[in-house]
Length: 239
Image (cartoon, rainbow, N blue to C red; front, top):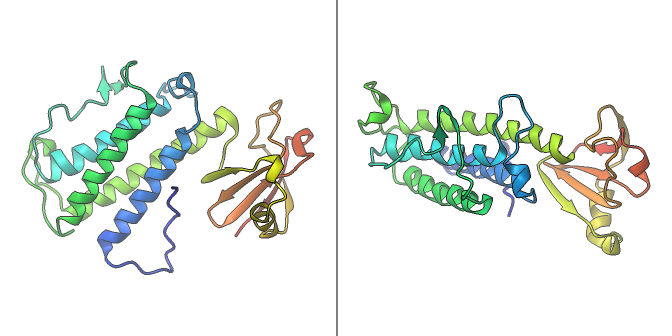
């Protein structure tokens, strides 16, 4: 299930809860951006820098492991830089995307346990992670993880749009056979459509599905029947 972005107007129990909710949200965004892509696609780069989507997911797994397990708790970690080879991100060809995502989710559970087992003001254990510097507090580490996730989730936003035009935070494809359902109608009725001109989220020459609703936070982006012939026009509204 996709975690909704935390609403700043809704109070959470503690500052640690705030960090955990945002991290859960960003992790779900990362996984959602690579779901449904072929193995060749997640292992191919769309950028001059050369990184691939599956490499980014593995990198984030090791980011959490380095900062919270090897770093903050000072636990021995056999290969803390296992996401890199020759100075670049690396995923072995034998590792499938499903395996990488499972490891990513498993590390998220470990990270949650670390956060829930300590106070934010606690200082990390001395370890090789710090290169001789004083260890930071758990709160500083979590702020760092937040900026890592915000940055890399944005990277995946752009790469996924380059791949197939997928934009926004969550996709719900509605089968034409049920496009008249109460769920579809309710989604479409939440917005007073207007036309946005500019670069299309659907690459030119690629037909959009006949019935598609994309939820973007509290808003709805709807590509309606008959719009396939208008690749530079979208119906768009904000919540």
